[in-house]
Image 1 (cartoon, rainbow, N blue to C red):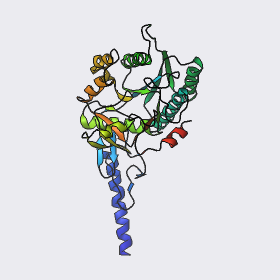
Image 2 (cartoon, rainbow, N blue to C red; image 1 turned 180 degrees about the horizontal axis):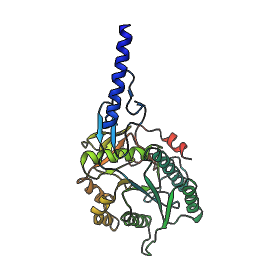
Image 3 (tube, one colour; image 1 turned 30 degrees about the vertical axis):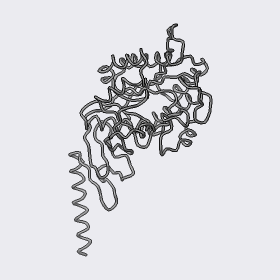
Image 4 (cartoon, one colour; image 1 turned 180 degrees about the vertical axis):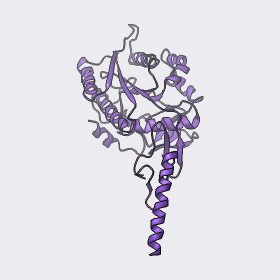
Length: 328
């Protein structure tokens, strides 16, 4: 009988403690069951609250003071060119349009996943297109409208002096940076050969809020774990996101997420990158990363669908075929 009374007393104290924690915004964890009684969750649930706090089992809570309110996703498309500066075939050896369509499908799927976590977030898509057939453009716009997302479409005006694929690509990139100045908060610049995991955007936004709050500054964040960076023995800081690890990097290609503030801060340098070719093309971007934090996911949250032998392509330890098939 004494054990029963003791159990009842402990349960009463536990209930009072839970109520107090709820009032003051604290969380508890039951070590025996790995349950979080204050929020009625367990260790398998998403514990973090967008714009409020980030919680990791074993690390505790990080207060969020950088709330994301808007996300603009600017997709640069061109279904008529296989690879800008190469004659090689891409992984799976499909027509270029197939990579564009799967990129679009994956971003839509990921945006739906994101809205389940960031319910108050406003998401807008913009398609910047170079020379794709009208039927392809209409197919993409119809898909976005059918899925309930706001979308704009801008054909990229090509200067008559631009005669090669790289020049038209530079014009598209320049247009994307100009558009970004009219965005409200976060901008995700995406090339049309990046097929994303469903959870990609969710992981990126959780990470953005958390790491901006930690560093007390805006950052750059990638969706891809580029293989070529493992060939360089550079030091990295490793951080913990919601469900993945992140590492600091000093280089990337042209698919990245950052804020309007960062675009405005480095606008001249970004535009300069689109008016003259450097070696590498992203040299100006890499110089920015010497001043600002850039983070890459481990493992990758997207597949860069270039040639299988390219050091800029297939990320390590990733089920590429599964991601490809899920976004047909």
